[in-house]
Amino acid sequence: MAHNTRRVYLDNNATTPTDPRVVEAMLPYFYQMPGNAASRNHPFGWEAEEGVDYAREQIASLIQVDPKEIIFTSGATESDNLAIKGVFEMYRSKGNHIITVKTEHKAVLDTCHKLEKMGAEVTYLDVAEDGLIDLAALEAAIKPSTILVSVMWANNETGVIQPMKAIGDICARHGVLFMSDATQAVGKIPVYPKETGVHLIAFTSHKMYGPKGVGALYVSRKAPRVKVTAQMDGGGHERGMRSGTLNVPGIVGFGKAAEIARKEMAQDAERLSKLRDRLEAAFLANLEEVYVNGNREHRMPHVTNISFKHVEGEGLMMTFNQNIALSSGSACTSASLEPSYVLVALGLGDDLAHSSLRFSLGRFTTEDDIDYVIEKVGSGVNHMRDLSPIWEMYKEGIDLNSVNWQEH
Amino acid sequence: MAYSDKVLEHFKNPRNVGTLDKSDKNVGTGLVGAPECGDVMRLQIQVDPETHTIVDAKFKTFGCGSAIASSSLATEWLKGKSVDEALTIDNMDIVEELALPPVKIHCSVLAEDAIRSAIADYQQKNGMEVTSSAEKAH
Image (cartoon, rainbow over all chains, first blue to last red; front, side, top):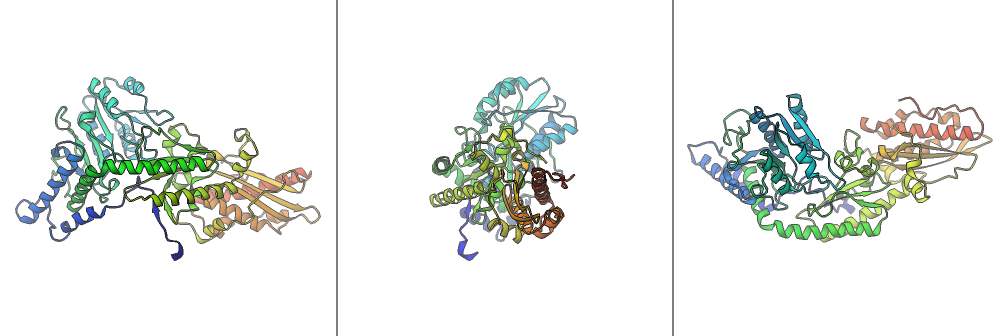
């Protein structure tokens, strides 16, 4: 395939490339400074600890919190688990009710399911067609036994951003802790938990151009002072909330990534939203029956989720996946054979969910990449429609809802 | 998950894509699957009324690469076969030929259903006894 090796990466919501500046910052911590940050009695340990402390400051500064409020973990999944299970265990005597949303990441939903088996009562809020939650429904769901509200900052599949400040206000009014999985938002848009009224946020390095295998949990220390019960027992690292030797090079890289994000986030967002809009506009102009999923105003600047009706997502991706990387909400891309539960929660029919592609741009996406994707994906859609019996029926004016399908 | 070379080959060069005149008495049409399930296959056969031989077969499929490859392969196999021979095509033959992984076996089942359904349609149209149930129990 040497003749055709162009590769465009538009799957930045899955993971981002590590910024070369981040890699450079990490390198000395592998060999020259190999110490354990918990070793208190020699320079190797001190250097490592200094590296970690500096990274903690860089990360705290990105989200405008105190460095002491940052707990390092292995990633956002662990942070979500620690936040939700840790709060449930710590505040169990106050109540057992948790409120979350149907479109959350599995790291939150499956954690909640586990807690249900351990005596928690969980309310899963619906979202509207645009992916936003109904604030009145949230407020109505709060009861005396409610100890935690968990709402993701921005959705991984659609990029839809929830009204975090308004949710924070509701939680404050009712004296309920507010936790957010902010994995997709931190480093891409301003995320300031203190002014928003969020008491815990989970996020990770590898979605913001840092290395994989390191994440963080912000835990508010003041007004309110929040405590979580450790889920990993051991040496009492991270103020007793997360034992385990710190991943020093990873944390240093995470810190550098946070510093770069703080400085460049605004310009990245502006550039990427223009490219994203151009991509979206081209598909809407060039092709029929194209639908953008989720609220287009309250949305991450680098994401668009689009359904190309009467074409199945995985098949469509096969027309260009040697050259273009992206994701689909189609069932065939998952082991479960169910289409994306996030898109289904938005009220999309299963047929549109099967036909969806998620384009997530990133810092290294160029204008040229976008033009290439417009052309390649557009011709892929046309090719697949030529193969599609339901496209042919649609073109003949047959009402597909009136067909008696032989379902499996 | 990587696709087998045979799936890729059929996907890139699908055989017999197209549409036969479904009002033709000698054409049998099978439409199986549902858009909600992410797979719809339409398979058509044209039968020589004298010899009961399938002289042409066409398909269109909405689905993943394995579904498209399964239907493409099915049309290839159908051509030149008698109706009775066509009914012996088993979904596991397709699985084997295309090296489909377990999660894609349903694509081959759909292709077998499409064959049976197209033959049943042809038989019904011509007042013959329907020897294939449109859907195999599964």
